[in-house]
Length: 366
Ligand code: G6P
Image 1 (cartoon, rainbow, N blue to C red):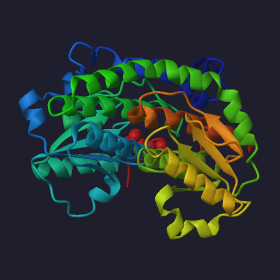
Image 2 (image 1 turned 180 degrees about the vertical axis):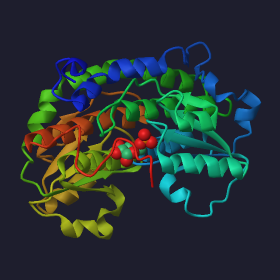
Image 3 (image 1 turned 135 degrees about the horizontal axis):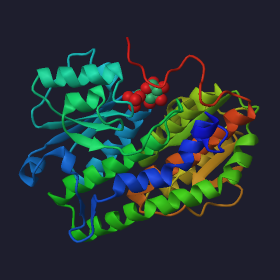
């Protein structure tokens, strides 16, 4: 293990650091600067088939499900076709309407998660068109799907998934770009996205280089018994993934909420013992998210802003900075500081980061 850790204290730290390189592997050979699109040969779908897709549904468990939610948002933004995500674990137990014009995307790092595998089998039985977004080549889900997008993240050991999730989201950005460019997405918009994707690995490096700032921020909150993670639209799946990370490795209770829904109940929980991590991307909803921080502050709640925007002084107790990229791609970058936040809070509490209690890296039996 010491050899494999290569000087890192645990696999989660090692794998977080592998993200820039892992993302380069996922992007390699897939970005087309000439036509401002992406190539995903493993899909096995020609432009006519891509155009006939009327809906996209992402299915996965745990972090893979949240990555699917990011994917659904990107598909709607770039391709303007309806898309959503659902836990594969739920999908398999209801009686889903399987639509032949929907592209189903089964997401799994391991490719062995039983709920996701059973979902793929059920979809195939009912005539659904299903592709995989899988990290492990030759795994059960990859074989069952037969086509899809390999994630190219390399082996992942830590139970808390990092580089695989990052590569899921960047892969879905490419899928969304491809679906958009055979429809209405303009060359100029496509070009902006291709360039934005190409620059993401360097942004990941700069976030990881500033890790100490996030560690200092996280250590201020080791007394917290519970935390909110607040996001809106693009930020919502990121808030969910951030809360999930904190829960699984630190055992601190974390709940993700849409910023817009706070006033419909959860605001009652805000007090000085309930810190809120608020995702504040520099996009068209910035003023709304500033309003959210004001609402929390007014009720005495500590605010940790994760942001690439200029925000008014004094609004946040702690600010975690994220580099600027294209607004549509912000979710991919904002995930990283939340990994680091969960990691350092768990480390400060002395948790066994790579092997959280009661959890397994992949759940292959019911
Ligand atoms: C388990 C792990 C999670 C993971 C989920 C899906 O619950 O603890 O971290 O997100 O399985 O795993 P998969 O290999 O299908 O992506």
